[in-house]
Structures are given as structure tokens and as C-alpha cells.
Image (cartoon, rainbow, N blue to C red; front, side):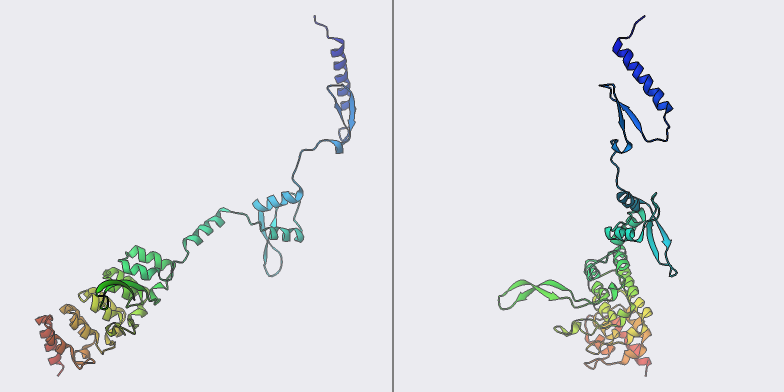
Length: 326
């Protein structure tokens, strides 16, 4: 049987003495006895001299809790709401809440993040975004996206500029020159750039007041001044009967408006060789214009007879309609 060395027996006796001493002591006391394994001597230490684990201060703990746990409670009869941190230290004081407000501690929740993304999504486009889009044959989805973010864009007049190649008489050559667009409203710009009937109807629905508003340059080429959307449509797309009918149904009064030279929509339709169906519909909405004279003293029939490109069917129709008025 192995025997322990004297030093090992002394160490075991010392440990047994420590166990009996710690058992007899009151556990509620804070006095703790530690043993140095090197010297095997007893060292008495108070609780204040123990090496403590580094912990965050109560103020830092409250700030951390305020970031993650906040409850909203009523503070007065006016139902004002204020945020108070829910912590193990109890309800914080008003002074502490002011510190939190200065620190700008607002919890970054999932809902707040979604709101930020939505706000970014509904950021307004440029004021002339719709005007530029109407010069590039936009689709309905592109129009809807712009109008969803800026519903007033269709009724906003903005004068754009464009680059055209013109002949310089003094230099005797062609050169690029920046000139203003003749029209200001998106609807009229889209018509001049040969937009589809669906795009024209969508823009007219978004801003029906534009149909009875005058547009065009007030200087330079006089034929582009004091025009309605119907005049512009009959100039650039005289055979788009569906769009003509749409405008007449949305704003019947548009058939009574005249341009700078006293031309009614019926005059304009005849001058630009519109289809017989279009002329018939214009006459139905305003029969009195069949005998109205423009600034040059011409009726629609006289214009049709003087223009070689006007079809014989149109001339015969206008003659019969005019003859039936007398």
C-alpha cells in the first residue's frame, strides 16, 4: 500500500480543515477564505477586495435596453405619448428620458425599415419627367409609374427645348440649333410625337382640363399658337378617329373652340385631309360650324374645294350638309 509523503499529508489535512471551517461558518456572511496553493496559507479577504468581473454601468445598461425595449404610455390628460424604457432598474426619471432623447435613441425596428424603403420608393420624379417621356413613345406602364408618383404632372405646362437641323442662309450649310418645343402639355407633346391612342387617352384622363386649354408658341410660327389638343391631334394625326371621338366625349365644348386664325376643328380637319368619318363626327357635335368662316373668310367646304389633296367624298359630304342648312 502506498504511503503519502509528509508534504502531501500536510496538504490533505489543510484542505480538511478548510472544509470544516467553511461548513461551520454562516453562509450569509460575506467573509470568504482563499487558499494560496503555493504557500498553503490562509488569507482572509473582504468582499470589496475581490477581483470583480467588468460590468457595464447602470446608465449604459439603460441605454442598451432603451434601444431594444420601449413601451408607449400616456403621461397626461391630453393623451400625449412618450417613450419610457422598460428596465430592471424601474421606470427612468424625466431627466434620464431627456438624455435618451438627446442621444437620439430610436429603436430600428422592421416596420421602420419598411417605411424607409417605401419613402424611397415614392420619391418624386423630376418635374419634367413626363414631358420627356412623351417624346419617346412611352408605354402605358411607364406613364402609370410617373403619374403614380406625380399625379399633377399631366396638367403641368413646361416648355422644353429640342435640337433641330436647320439651314443657315448666311453660312450656306446645315447646322444644329436649339429651339423650343411648340407645345407645353404632356398630352400635346405626345400627340406631336405620334403617340398611340391608348397613351393619348390615358393622358387626357389624367388631365381632362388640358383638352380645353390653349397651347402652342406665342411667337415665331403663328400656326402653332392658340391651339387646343383637338386642333393638335387633327394636325399631327388626322386619321386617329378613336382619339377624336374620345376628346369630343370627354369635353364636348372642345368642338366649339377656334385657333388664332379662326379655324374650327372642322376647318383644321379639312386642311389636313382627315378621314371622312372624322369630319362627320366633328359635324355631328357642332353642326353650325359647317357654314362658319375662318379668318380668311373661308368655310370648310370652300377649303375642301380649293385643296387638291382633299378627297371628293369629303367635298360631296360637306356640300350636302351645307345645302341641308338652307
